[in-house]
Amino acid sequence: MLKPAELKPEDLGDAAKVIPGRDPELRVSIPRIPVSETNLQSRVIPVCEPTLGENEAKYVLDCIESNWISSAGKYIPRFEEAFAAASDAHYGIACANGTVALHLALATLGIGPGDEVILPTFTMIATINAVTYTGATPVLVDSEPATWNMDLNQVADKITPRTRAVMPVHTYGHPVDMDPLVELAERHGFYVVEDAAEAHGAEYRGRRAGSLGHAACFSFYANKIITTGEGGMITTNDPDIYRLASNLRDHAFSEERHFWHKYLGFNYRMTNLQAAVGLAQTEQMAGFVQARRANAARYTASLREIPGIVTPPEMEWAKNVFWMYSILVEDEFGMTRDQLRAYLAERGIETRTFFIPMHFQPIYYQAFKGQRYPVAEMLCQRGFYLPSASSLTPHQIDYILDVVRGARRHAAASAS
Image (cartoon, rainbow, N blue to C red; front, side, top):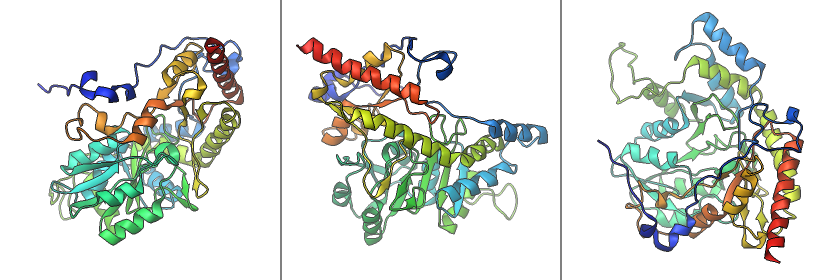
């Protein structure tokens, strides 16, 4: 029987303070918002939820009525083409979820035991797990304070003869500074695989995330800007990567005869039902991105005036899509991050803490024991997401802002 990896606070020493506590209990209480402006069932503002429209139902019903519900059917290629185009890429390979998209991309590139893949420690665990699935060795780097993305100077320092790929993560919808990274990869001869799970529609110097490296991987989980419930996509401009990834995704069946396999393939297919939802979502992608950016602007205009709140970055060369509206809580605010989260939860506002860095994960702690990444640890200790759905209303955002301001006043009164 598989046993879990254990990690106790005493094992971490002074680093234990970085690890967030349990999520606070939500109270169902939003008295200042009309019922019509909230989730009618819970009257809680969730941290994120999908925005579904008429075409999602129409296309799914078409799948059911035509009996094309599995991994064949017209919506899969239509979704692949539409989403690839929306990502400035020539090709799309739809997958079962974003994690398998990452694994499939690495497997297609031939990455395996003996290879090293450089990635940020500040990311969701799917990124490092995909590397581990291949048998390659993950190599961690810290984040840079300005963008919260991987520190490119550390990437250069971590390159060895075994480096086969780097996986930049476009954190919370803000793209990585890709040109220096791609130039570094070309100079040293390794691949660049974008983890664009959080960056649908994000732009770097006028080019879309999904077209900036050798391949890119997206997630369509329910909290993403584009969703299929579960689902993922590889995008690429390389026809060889496209052909091989498409083959490996479907058990690597041979064109010579059906039950004939020359590669170790995977069952990483997406269903036609999911693709039907994905196509309808992609048709609305520009609107979803516009809504998230408008919501972010409304948040930022007020939050940047509150002492102790750090609003999310957007460099002049970037278009941040604000997958999650993410803030830092500094000492000047008068409450800790966890105290502010509890204050919000008591008033019906759900939040989520930032990622816990990979070098502190119980399953990976021994592999990186003794390594410290101060920027990632600071982000983990101070950061959290406010509600971020594309469907948030101005009334909901204003209510959230009022509660944050109330928390600041409460902290100031308690200190006096």
